[in-house]
Image 1: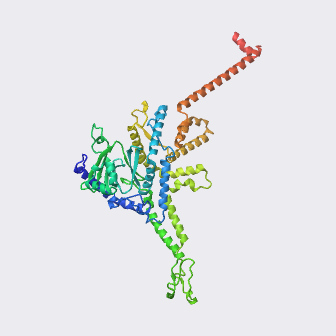
Image 2: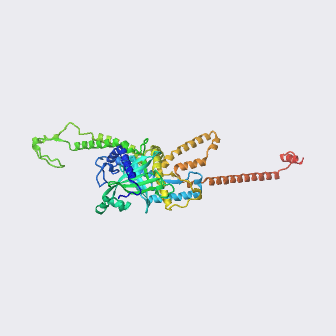
Image 3: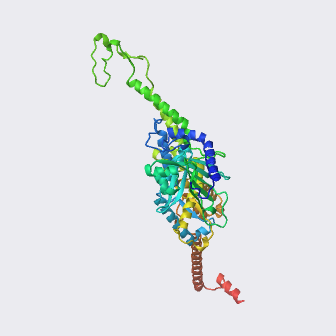
Length: 558
């Protein structure tokens, strides 16, 4: 009797039916993704619904002659990795929604400690390896779908799903919340993951004879329709998770569980309207990439025709002409003139012109993949300072602004939330200060790409300061309307400068009061010195009626 684990036949059949329906909806996307895989990202997808089996070392690069698009996609993925989630520098900070609360010393210390611990956990896991390929998949297929599971050793473990394995549907907020994943697993791995006794009879027999044979698994991840009120187990959790074994006489239920927070994420490079699947830059350049392969074939044929043009020769020379380099062919003088090119007056092909056209197509592909943005400093800009290069790069990054924002909302925010929750349940976070009890946290991204977006705000501050400086030359009172301390804080925040280098508002106010007190003391000392000098002069003066002092004395005596 197959395991049901609390699910009846109708519920399981509905899951299989929904999986089939979602795969049917995905059919046209699969056609597009197959072409992207064949021409750009050869090892990025597998389509079980089309009968494909797991990779067995097969060469999938047969349609790629010029690999410029593949190399450009690698640069794009590396640029996104280094710019958004670099393992070499801090890329996120935790904050409270209350700006004033963020200034408290205990709150700042606790947030900094939590950030450090989370960064350690992510660095110890496979997060950075997976997220790099996730950016590559987004650039290639427009989507990346991955899971974050708890792990006994590394706390968290990430898995990236190849395109073609999963079908998705979006919720009312336009974000993906339903993922049906159809994939392969060896019987050996399935027995370890779910238990041998839960596998079908067929799978159990394979375990003894061929334990490394593949079986097909369906993972259903979706919001839980009905949550058990008052319970503390998975039936009350907001996310449902069910694993089924496909291919059995009845889809065998392997596991029924759930998640307390979002654990599977589907991030999209760009989404149009109500589309659940995204579009990436490789979708845009796919026609160019296919044309590039055709152009390379033509250019190679032209080169071959120039190096080895077709020849004409008399029939009596058949088998007597050697075409290998350095070979000697001995013929009569009357026959030697009979060997000549088949097209003596035709140029085999404009090889240089073809190469120039190919280069233009390659450049067009690289621009569409934003290679010029991520390699801007390396490409060199004569006559431009480093600051000008950075400013120009920041302007170009405006093109990636919507993409970067989508990474925050669809990928990085839920990953940070999930990691924080897992660490909290394991007791890996320090006790929160009293001020933070019940207070939600938010994430502020301080990566290179995030700061590049914010850096554009400094241009507005510079423009205001320059204008104020010019107006102050005519009307000095304009300085009264400029808050220099606040502008300095905003400027530092836009540039991502460590806030520790700036004094707190309390310190600034204390310094101002001290400066005012010192100025008052100096003014008082100057007044006393002036009075002392005046007294000295009065002591030496004669009070005669014709002097001012005498007149004052005379007036006082009256």
